[in-house]
Image (cartoon, rainbow, N blue to C red; front, top):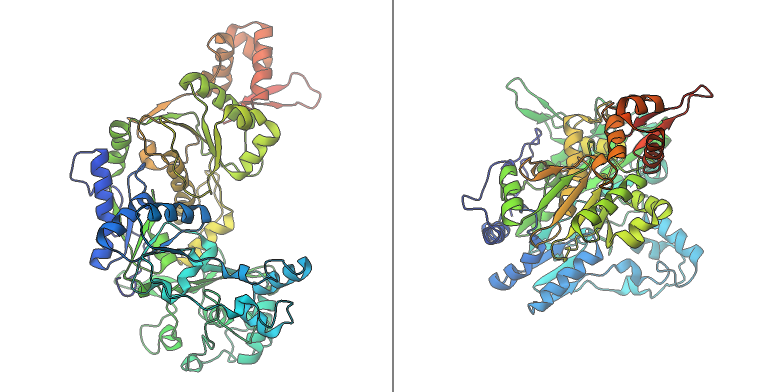
Amino acid sequence: MTPGVVDNPDMSATNPSGKSLSNSPISRNHAVAKTKQLLLQGPLDGEDRLVQAPPTVHPEELIPELVAAHDLQIVFVAPTDSQLNRMKRRCRALNLSTREICSQYQRCPTYAGKHNDTVKEKLKSAAKQIPLGLLHKTRDLPCCPNCPFTTWNRPEFTEQVVLANPRHAYMDSVLEDRVVFTCSLRGDAYVTKIENPSRALDAYLDRNTQFTGYSDFIQNRDSGRVPSILDYEDGTIDPSTDDEEFGYAIDKDGHHLAPQAVFGLLHTEELDNEWETSFKHEKDIVNKHYPKNRPPVGGDPFDIGGVDYYRTRVVRQPGETPEEDTIYVLDVPDFTKANSVVAFDIAPTPWMWRLYYGTNFDHQPMYSDDETAEFLRSAMGVKVVQTATSRKPYEGNNVTPGRDASIAVWAIAEFGKPPIVVSTKNALGRYRSKQPALLNADAKNVIQYRRGGSVITDKSPLIILNGSPRPRNEEFQLWGALAGKSVRNPNQNQSFGETGDEIRRQFCESRIGKWATRFDCRNATVVLNTTAVPEWLRNNRLVAHASPMDILSANASGRRAVARYIRDKSGNRVTMNDIQTQVGVSENTARRARDSFIEQEWVVKHATKGRKPDEYSWVS
């Protein structure tokens, strides 16, 4: 593994997407062979790679073959049990020795709820601040004194394949002398959110500084009471020993990350959006970036404190009062212990993967965007149908169940099979309450965008992707702040700015691109009821556009004309008289079309508060 990190504040990729690595005819066999080569090259060279395989080629299905063929010792890191179980089955089919690390929290009967639900909830709440091992030593728990949690010893990992969730990477024995393969970019694994900083940090500040609690500290960080950086020379930034829990340390002074949080807050810089970050760069006179809080001369506070500038980052989201602040601490496991780290994603944002793993991944895209589209069209026979004209973020009340149901009915009639419908958790819940036929009768299966990565095994599948996932604004601002960038709320064009839009591509476009191509057979049909897709899914050689009015029965020419007229008004309001006179249809046809489109949520009615006539407009 490449030692250290050369972080790029401009967030440019080492090997930017758009430059092909193929140099060979586009074919399925070549794509699979080249992907294997890319996955293997990092371990062979002892370097860290971010592999962008072609869509429909799934690296996790190829990894067991590489392990068997090259006698690798690996740890596979994935965030869900379903992903780990699928890898376990593949490895065992090849007779590879395998060990899955189970959650040790469940070893504690109290934590697992086997004694008392009230005690269980209190223990879970306390464990968010204090390691579970320390709670067993300081609290009177019904499972003590011989709780299986405290008597469990970490095993020696001798198997070829260790299956782990992201937090297990804090165990050095899991990483040492192994290759890490991972597909996980879940912020809750290595980023800890502290919502009540006074409760979490007061004890540490009272014992170790001249401040009286968090509010005093935040308001007077620039006073003479600030600890000298020399106070950290003896390693007090991490004054404790590892606990049995992954990533935690026993600390008598409150939250287990209190030392890192306070150190980071001493060295934060304020961004334009008022968030603070301990990872902030600025340009010097020769246009090179350097960290603002690491002075070029004199003592380096991070070096003196023994804090890895790239693996430990602290962000503050200010509240109305200090008590209402939110603190985020990124505490990345030490992946330098591994021989190599190989991450893979279908449409990655490289700087986000580098930030999250604290390592300088070499980004390796298999094909350029144009080549990827050609691969899908010619090698895989994929047909893409576009039915939307906007991103359609499906959160809150933005879902259009009626229109989505109509698209499903049309797709079944057009392609002769029930579709697999993919959407957000919010949308699937609204479908169940408003359009049960979409799930219970019309769709063969439904999948959430955030679900694990099972491969669709249908031959020539029909897949409909409805709407796009939309993280909260705070998530965009958090990732920006972790990278030292200011991200504001979206403007009227729904842009978060350059950095924010890159973050959205990782959590929206990449996720949609994954589920749009989560199969490995030929002749799939993909219906995009959103425009939030990777560039290679927008290629005009691959995509056939279908406007919403085409999703009507073939004998509804009058209704189709009404739909076209209202839609072409681009959101401007029209009356029923406008429709009749401009389209040239009967009053009955216009009325039936209007009622149908309102029910399908293609058209919205604008009541005129008792003044006739009512007005109507097309919903984008």
